[in-house]
Image (cartoon, rainbow, N blue to C red):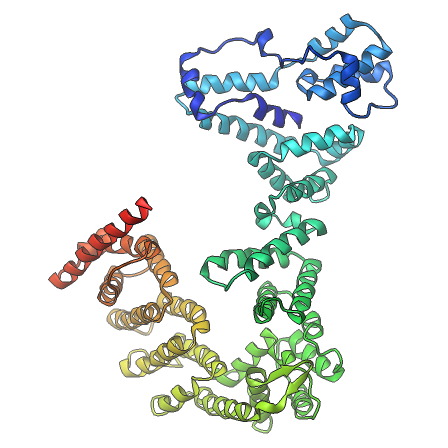
Length: 611
């Protein structure tokens, strides 16, 4: 494995040396290729500076060490220490020379010569030649890697020399990547586990986001979790952090231990919020729970214990029973209803568990969902209202907001009656819009709209007015509830990509034009970059009819005006410049809009390049 490191030490293939490769023909190795030694120090001096020497350094052991392949290319301190041990035990300088010269193979120098040939005769750049050699060597190491043999050889090594070598090895990105790859295959290898820990301690934990093996090491995982949470909590969450959040969720959901550790940490942070970020910490805990549920994990027993309801065993037992089965039970719902009607109810956080909220909103808003007995319907409505409107004060429910709770309960009841029957929606649209001012109702209605528009039994899409009513509700939610916009976009994307066999081609196109208008409205209310990213994906993957993309471009250009941000131009300009869109625009007004945007966006990009 030390050959990996020596390859980096001897392959000097930087771009500024490329002229030397072109002018200098390949040559055979000579004495000058051997590493220069510091002749100002004798062997006795080296012995003291090389660190601790093997206590059992017999003549046989010293000879075996000196005769190792390319031992003379090892770290100078190690070489001089072994030479000193040999001279003390044997005292034969000629034998010492024979051992060193006999073991010399020049593997790293051969790689250097091969790289020179690639540059001079294969017209490869110096960097490409270096990458080719390193990739080939990494492939050989991967194919021949024996974790048992490696661990045994490491145990026999001088610990100081091993740590020095490993510390230097992990400074190179290509060998860190090799360690990550091997760690995925050999999770029990002690050497790889130690290497992962060393990489983390050297400040490269950002690279471990996609290395599940790193999660198995508690110190490594703790360091990564601390770094990621500090970054996410340092400022208000925005779209640029979405990737960081996804990677954090992947790491935290690696196993039961990492999930529980992360949730306990978040729970304790939420109890003592710093800089008023307690709500953000609680939201992270909910996102982590949803990520675990999406992976098919049953985390119900942890969820009910980490919401502060452990002093209410009847409530936690009823909740855990339903979460484990992923189905609401009237008897358990009645138990919860009675407990939350008491003077000392359980904390509302118990009702805000993501899976329970999803089950409850589906039951109350989706047509043909779980049948609810009319006798128990009020319990469902009340519990959802408590989850949405009640405010916790320490561990008890704050009853000082009973007015808001009653209004929320009435809005849920009215909207639920309309959605579950799915009748007279057009006549009741005003009532629905009034109820949409409550976030919990807006959340439930979005699920209702998607179900109705994706199921032919829910809505006759050939009836333009009927379909438009549902889309009006989507616009209303997008306008008034910014936190639900990230949920609206995936819903529109699914509807946009769905094929409706009952509709003829013209009706399909008309319905999708209306969906495109919803995308434009999402941009209008501020959800700009995600919409443009999706439309750009539709263009590159040919997911949609080009006429729909032309309609989108013209509608957007009619809505925007300069000055433009660089990120906006980078996303919209490829759509406007596309020949399938630009060349097919027949109206002069449309062409003029495109030309004006291209001209203005060019100024934006020039200004960005100057800065």
